[in-house]
Amino acid sequence: MTLYYEIESLLQEIGIGQMNSTAYDTAWIARLSKLGEPLGFRALDWLREHQLPDGSWGTEFPACRHDRLVCTLAATIALSEHGDPNDAERLERAKTALETTIPRISDEVLIETVGYELIVPTLFDEAESLGIVLRNSYSDLEQINRKRVAKLNALPGSMINRFVTLAHSAEMAGSDGRRLLDTERLQEANGSVGYSPAATAYFALHVQPEDPAALSYLRSFPNSDGGSPDVFPIDIFEVGWTLWNLSLLDSLNDDLLDLCQPHLDFLEAAWLSGPGVGFGRGYTPKDGDDSSVVYDVLTHFGRNVAVDPILKYELDDHFQCFALEANPSVSANIHVLGALRRAGYSLSHPAVQKIVT
Image 1 (spheres, helix red, strand yellow):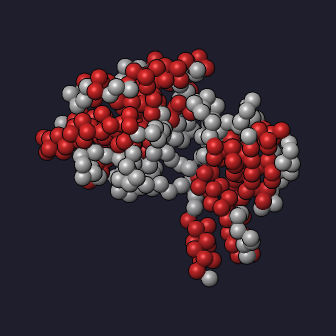
Image 2 (cartoon, rainbow, N blue to C red; image 1 turned 45 degrees about the vertical axis):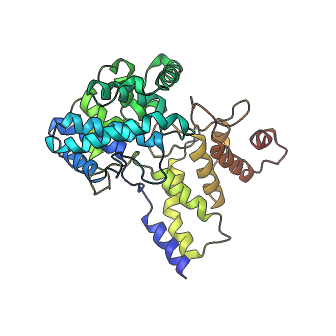
């Protein structure tokens, strides 16, 4: 019965999405202290409390240098700009951590953080202007910057708006690069920019200072520790993936099936006959990964939806997760495969064989 009660509790808890606080996005919210925003001061305190023993910020385990780099740069910039003398020792430890991390980062197989090639050049520009680190200390920076330029050149109209995933990393435009932003079509209905706390804090600081909708979004997080998640909300992702895992069980009893029904109603209402779904309801870009998982879930539990949206993510030799993605996702193609098999596609079907290959 223990498993039953754990599943019951899970089905009663899932919803908008629960995620731990992250140093990178919290650092961007900390910059709002410039505006006298209470969120910014709470975020500064979170950064002070979560500096790692070696002076860096980021996920403690597993240690990833790429993650440590972006988080430490962002946190150090935020604390430096705030200018509290009590942070001086903390900042010196951070600079030492950067001096240790940067020369070794090329030795690590790239574990990509979101928008890495977009964000890092901007962070280095800001950090150099504050005397934190020199651009030429990172030997791969010019190569990364070329990737950034190529990504921006691939954008429709070379502009970032809510219709492309780059909105999630809109802070890469920096304080003087706002010409890259299609500001009239940037915000989502919930006030966010790309459902990203970092990009939204940037928007409220540099693009539309103290924008009420952006600040309202930033105040809506369930995190009570002063920190920020790196994306919010993720309601379709959390509900869809929970039910997908439960669908792998042999069966659920009637009580658990009853608890699933409101979640299934939510997913079915979010499903769009054209592009499927994204990770959060209302998030403009949709994707092949969440769409495949949700299709699999809905059809498994007896809801009648068409497979057509999944087929719109098919390319010449694989299925894409997001438009304009840099490389194919193995896991997204696995989930597409599950959706196609659920739809009755045979193993010999060309679309199935494309994924297998």
